[in-house]
Image (cartoon, rainbow, N blue to C red; front, side, top):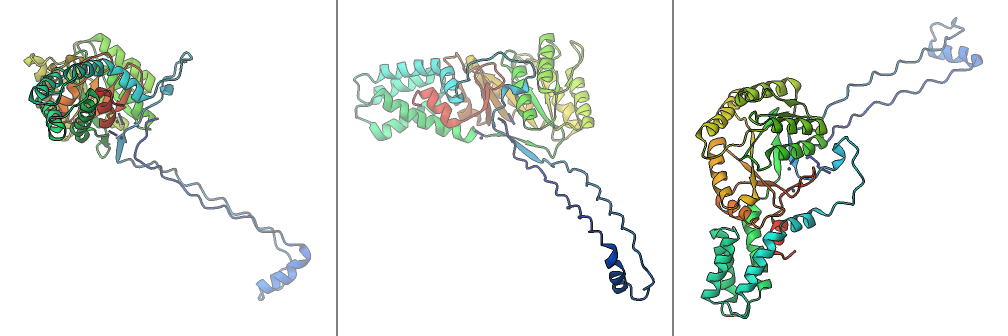
Length: 400
């Protein structure tokens, strides 16, 4: 992975400029009176009548040079942010489990179902054409996609055809092939701060976790030292506006909002102007849930993109789509639609916990080859982590 949301306590790739100060000169020693005539005569031979020397005034200390602000051009979102960004006192809780353990537990339903079906295929059977066909069907039903299913069966046939094969052998091969599919898309989120504000537009169908993802990402960025402004572009739901305001308070990020039902493109325009005036590093814009079968709503999303492009020809600089793992095959169509309308250039997979359909991420990666920046398992502020192909492949195959 890698932001291997911006995971990375969350750190960034900039270095702090160090300010060196010149040492203050020490005061000169005061000369004893009996030594003055001789020293003065030697120093000023043309004026021997000088018999006294006033104590010189100390030189003023140099004015400290103004502190230099670090110049940040590009940051990488790749580590997690601790929950200390929340100001309210939290009750004492048991230590959090390691991230990989939480992800594996979140994918346990997907892994158990897949492992059980694989074991059923390879009980007392050699690897032959019928077995390979049965395995291919199992992998496709697990939402891994046809491309990945063929990769796994081809790899098995090349090395184990005609031999006894256990389900452990199959899951090991599956983990290796899944990692090969996911490796190219597991990238850290990089923000190019040559554009300020760097505009992140977050899109997706209602219920996929857009607003929560925005809050978690804002927490990571502010923890990393960036100034963030949020825009409540989901003007159709009062709950979404209020939820974003809460995240703004938690992360000390100003929130630009308007009345319910207002024009979302106009809000995006105002938010960009205010973020520019405030010198914000990042502007994150929420959007309403766009159903791919609603031409009117999709047209409004296109309008937001056009308006931002007039303010900065390259804006929005990052378009993140949140994809709900529980939607299975529907997620493939959603990615295609939003990519065409809004220019999606990165994914955040949410709700991997408690679903038996986690394999859909593999199918999306194989078909669309879009970067997968983060995955979410849970609702906590640190339940959004940079995506790791190796960890996900081991968790989904149950080999870790």
